[in-house]
Amino acid sequence: HILPKRSEARCPVCSEILLEPVTMPCSHSVCLHCFKRTVEFTSLCCPLCRLRVSSWARKQSREKSLVNIELWEMVRQSYPQRCKIRMEQRDCETGGEGIRKTYRLIVFILGKHCN
Image (cartoon, rainbow, N blue to C red; front, side, top):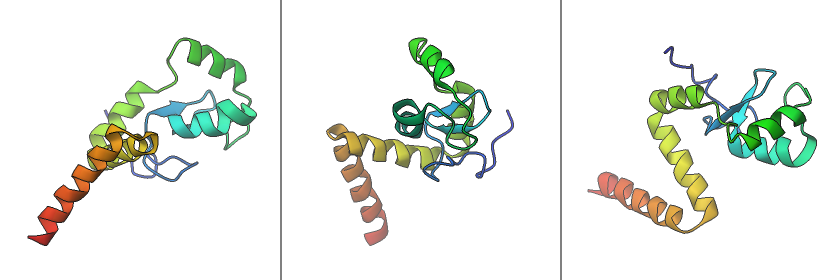
């Protein structure tokens, strides 16, 4: 696999590392969260080129195959730390265990830098 450049691994909607990327028929990729927020629940169009993706999105959602697994694996292998941080941030937004994980990460980082 050719590892994606940082610019190719960045979501054009949130400007962060692609987290569970969704690649639409127009070949644009966005994070699953950004896809749901900007496409699935609003316009049903690609946020970049405005191609209508409603039929495709419904089919992929039914098949539970929205996430581009190959791209997601490449991004995770190329940028493991960034992906880990983003996953923890996402968990934190949903509460519960994510908050505890983030707290443990902060304590760990502070411990390394304060000793």
